[in-house]
Length: 311
Figure 1 (tube, rainbow, N blue to C red):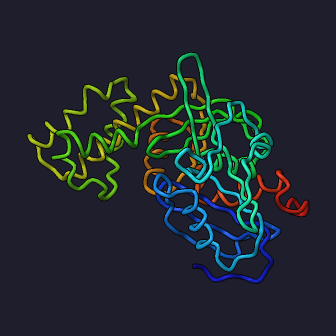
Figure 2: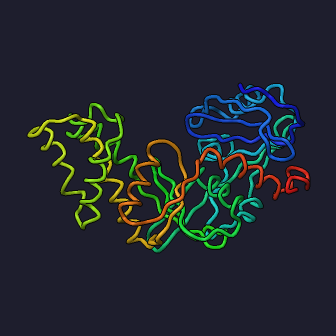
Figure 3: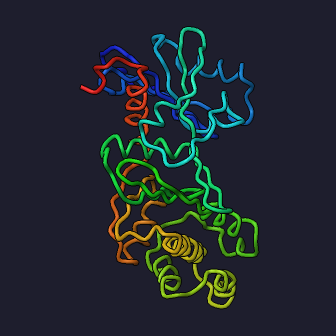
């Protein structure tokens, strides 16, 4: 638990994912007065257990409205918040919050987004809040936002409205290939130190017109014949997969010359490096830093807190 500055809390904000939940008590200007963390319970808790978890997490805080984003609004969460079909603006998102009462709290959940194009369907839940945080800073933003992760999202935004997006299972493919195929024997040090040469060399092969499908086994063969640190081969796999994602996204119409990358950690560095190799400009935002401003902004638009929140 963090130290609590002086001030009156007017809103509880929750970033409620599959594994963990973050909670913050915000003042009338959106500043964090107190912040706590706990276990999520998504997919495990009953509705009653979600309520108990909320009470435990917010114990001692005032009975103010709460706004939550993430998997807490999934079918396995506390209360399902159905998807909104794109195009979706911040205003429409704020008008579509799912609300219910719990004790002395009015709780609202941010819905996810969906996009369909012919026979291709897509959904996101949680990432829309980080995008809303970007739009809270730049209401008229137009361009492409990239959110790396287990299921990476490429999002087309036009004048503050999410028009369409596409999901690439890059992170999950990396986990599957590195842990559940023959490549696992060459990945024992996966997650080791960053290796620029290995990653950039592999990514450059894809950007030069190669296909990752014909190169994955070469990682194992190279390890058998040439040896080397397994972390090196891990970075080659990462380079093949992330570059393949970039190439696919550009074929899918996400082909601007600049992108905004939203995320944290070493994974963001990999995406920045891939963008540089392609000659793209990239601007990076920490995803966790965008969530509280996003939820505060959405709550203000929805009338959950006083009109002075926009001052």
